[in-house]
Length: 292
Image (cartoon, rainbow, N blue to C red; front, side, top):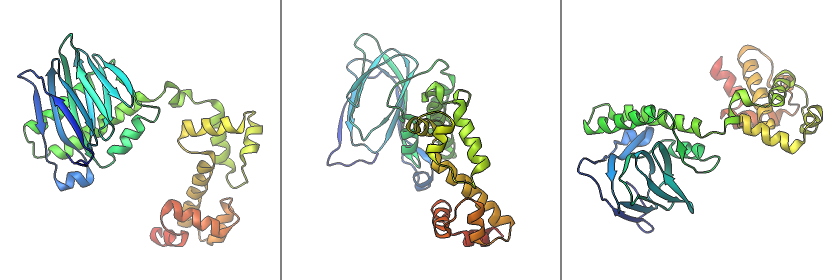
């Protein structure tokens, strides 16, 4: 696994049972460039004084507790790792975990990296790092065991399948980590009303002050809650709606770019062209040529 040797820290005591498994993989260049890929993976039945202390390792570590208890120190906080808990670490950050003195600590784990690995970590820790306590453990446990099995057998398609399995596993964990009020059935009614208003009236000027007055809510709270439930600001939502309509007109009408800008609620043509290029990577005229 890659690391900065100048600042690299690793102290380990591998006090393990004989049936423990540790697999070290060397990913292909295709996997490194395009997939989420395994660096190491395994099943450990540990006993005291098993521990790992590490920092500045270019890897992400996912650990799932099958039984027993462990202890984790991460970002200056302590966590007790009981049955059914799972955590994901960025191994560049200092971390320390160890088995309990009282009973064996049994875990499944993977070190992985690759395309968008950091994005999943950021999504999972968006609301702060913490343990995820699983009530239904079947999916996670079976996925980790399948990853280990694929690499034990050196399956010819293991990198592609492993990518799919890690993505599915991380997606599930991100969803489980979200606050309960994040899901659509808990979105405040006024958030959907604002979205509907923008969808209907995006060709007109829409100001935050006017929305706050119309829906009887403070501008600051409205802006914060809108981004919380949609992932973007009100202004970004408005611009996206206007650009989507512009793309439709560019494809299916013969209107000039200046007229399209006007029909999308943007009176300054230069500003419209800049907004369009920021989001699509090409100017409106180039977009039209590519799609007609």
